[in-house]
Image (cartoon, rainbow, N blue to C red; front, side):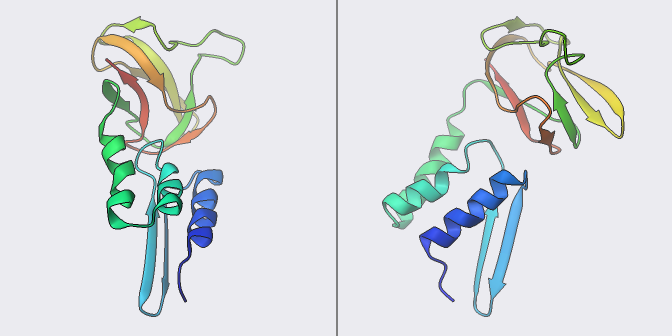
Length: 145
């Protein structure tokens, strides 16, 4: 069985649509593993489709390394919330300056609301997850520069 670009794109869609972090398939001598380590990994199938050469497949990885500021990662598996309650304003917004120790979001784990504090001072340049989205341990929640 040959893994074609269309098949890889379908696997990437399953990965993204189901909030999975990894899919692995083996068929005799062939194997494929798709991993989502940072937001934006879904770009890999597009690059492979445009030019299926090994050099082109490495381009998305190089882009992922050029991040905006320092990543603030989730300390646990849970559900991301940008505000203390559904009708409240978000803790932070893109462009806002935060200090080390400021609460920037909540990650709910096992029905406990865990306030996530900024590990450093700076300006929020990107929020990588949506309100109510499941997050994994170590997943980038936002970038602060």
